[in-house]
Structures are given as C-alpha cells and as structure tokens.
Figure 1 (spheres, rainbow, N blue to C red):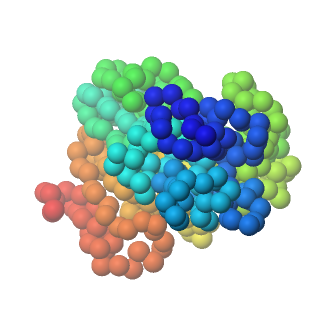
Figure 2 (cartoon, rainbow, N blue to C red; figure 1 turned 180 degrees about the vertical axis):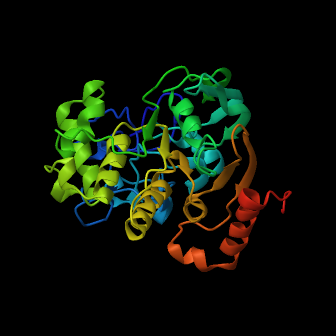
Length: 374
C-alpha cells in the first residue's frame, strides 16, 4: 500500500497506518502508534512495546527491509526504534538521514527553538531623591548599559552607590527622572509579570502558610487554576527542600528557609528575568553559601536571565557570568568584568588560580581606582 502524504511523499511504499505520519489513513488501526512515544519493531515479538525517544533515535524514519531487495510489511522489518516525536530536538543537527532526506519527513516536525528572553537595555538613565533638607541627591546619572539574556549578571558596588535603586527602576517600582529602560525591546513603565524581584527583607505574608505564599501571585493574577498552582508550588518546594514545611508559617521557618520560599514564590510566576536585591544579606556564612549553591544550580538548569545585586565580592565572583561594577553615586556602571570560570560551578573553583586573578582585578576596580588592568 502506498501512503498518501500530501506534498511530502508520493511513491514510497509505507503502510498507511505507519506511525510517522500524522494524517494516517487508518489512525484507529494501531492507535498507540499515534502517541508521543516510540514503538519497538522486533520481528517475532510484540511490536507494541513503548520506548521513549532519545536524540540518537532521530533519522530512522523511512528505513526499509533491504533483505532480498523487497519492501515488506512493517511487522517484518529489521529491529530498530522508529520515532514519533513532537518535541524540541533539532532534526537538522541530529537526523541520521540528513541532507535531502529531510524532505521525506512528514508531520513529525520539531518545534522551533525560542530565543532567550530578558535582554535589558538602559539608555541615559537618571534618578535623584530629595533629602529632608530639600536638597537634591543624584543617585544614578547618565547610566547606559546592556544586560545580555541567559546570563547571571551581577551588579556590585559599595553600600549607597545606587544598586538597589537600579533594581527598583528595572522592576518598574520607580520611574526614572529621565532616560529609558527596555526589556526585549519593550519600554518599562510599570511592574510586570515578565520580571520578578526578590527583596532584601522578607516578602512572605506572615498569616499565610508557605504553600499559600507561593501560589499567591499566579492566583491573584488568574494565571493558572488553583490545582495547577498548588502542584507547581509543591514541585518548587520539593526542589528547595521545603516540602515538609509546606503547611508551616513564615515565623516557623529559619532565615534560610524563608529565602528559599521567596525564590519559589518568584519562580512560580515563570518570569523572563529574576531580579535579586542582596537576597542573602544578613544570613550566617554557612546558610549564605548553601543558598548561593541552590540558586547557582537553579540558574545552570534553566538559564533564567538574572540580575543579582550584591556588595559581597566573593559572592559576585562565585555566581556571575559578568560583574558590572558601580562606582560611588552618582556614577554609572563603567566597568564590566567577564567571569570565565567554568560551569557547572562549585566552591572548588574558589581555590583556582583564575579565581584569584579575577578577584584581584575586581579589587583594583572597587578599591584602588586603577585603570583597566586587563
């Protein structure tokens, strides 16, 4: 029987119910073959066994039995996994057939990969405040900088240099005196669900349980049903080691636990950008290092665009892909340090020669006021 696949395959002798084709003529005949898993094609065995797809399974579509040079019913084809895949694998890269054989693929196409989100562009930004005596204090002045998406960007500087003000401006909680902030080409004029901020102080509602705190954002925005929100909350709490405390209240948690709950509270909203304003400030050294590892693992798993504010040099070096150094107010960000330490990253990296070199460069920028040492 010749499969009738419009515009793609016209004369290849493939059984009409073959699973690779989304518009099979006999979809009901072998129903399990039209789902998102593989069928094992073993002669003299049950050929309905489910096998989940792998990258190296791509490209085995359209294989025929070369034994004797004749086309045969698919039950008698040589053993092998034949793909029914609807995911994000790159067929052009991984397909074993390659080249013109791509034209033989039918409805089993891949989803296009989406570009990274969270590109921040700041142009001529300025922000000032008025003190109690009525004097104008310029905190940020003529600041122009870009933060690339998919990176863990760290802004650091001494206390009072305007780091938190920059974070509030990016989050949309403040309006600049002049200048513009764009995220993925869209101007920032108010807070938005595409960017979530974790503050220096706890933002958990004290009268709500941990779970209720985490699901509060998506429920109040009607972003998802309550059952789905609770399921996602429990998945995040499991990841952060808080599942046994899901029914506790914030005052029943340690400081480190509260910080983890707040990160889960932010992540459930699926933001494009995470803005963290010195989130581990005030914690003891062991707890702070533990939370740094938690967030670093999260970032390496997700590549979530991150702007991390800190005044701790060691924290910046351990976490960052790039460090943006802010001088004393009203100076803008005028120095960027590329942190080329390998990922995945553990605290062992702090004993390497390159780490010590980067630390010296950063100290020169922060404290010595030296010219570019690179």
